[in-house]
Length: 257
Figure 1 (tube, rainbow, N blue to C red):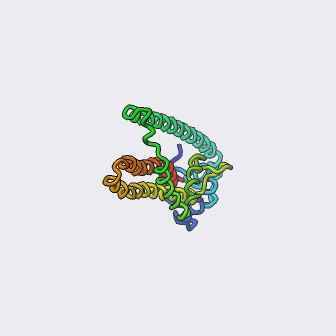
Figure 2: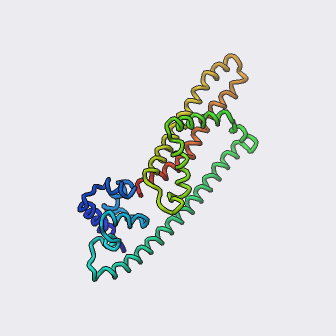
Figure 3: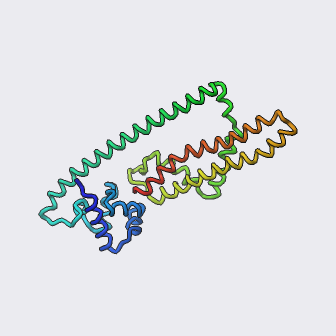
């Protein structure tokens, strides 16, 4: 098996010999310096997709890198075969782990949705689900965040974040998405979550004077006005909840690639 600690120490040694910091090496590979740190401390291995680029920067061969040392000509061919088998085994293990994670996520999502659906149906009934549909509340909860995203210059990065996640962080040609693009999309989604929750709170507060006025002047409007206020906050929380898993995928990727 590949010795992660030995490989990590070798990467650190070669990086220093080439006069590179963790940050400069990360920038050259379009990854985060946290990833380089993870390699050098033996907590992970470089992804196969960037291994050749890493070796070019460090001026070593892939065989040297996976051995954790500069190999002599006598050992080179033997080690190459061993490393090929190790990489194939590691790749297969990773594929199995990814498949298990996807199945677990799907099952968890289905079970969670089923329980939530049954909870609301048992308490409300099918007919009363219409109580939760209100176009003005939805527009209020989504319009202001989109406005903030537009003025903040985050609109493209925000929607690009969904595209990146759906494409599994790969470009159309199969190459990894640049780290800077992932960072900007993550920042855009974090900004969107905050602005969405802020919009929900502002929408609720905006409706308070209307509700209080209706309490004294037009009591029959108290219920509808209160419903609009509550639904605005509800839609905002729901939208933030939908965005959050995509943001976490982007955020976690920044520390692994």
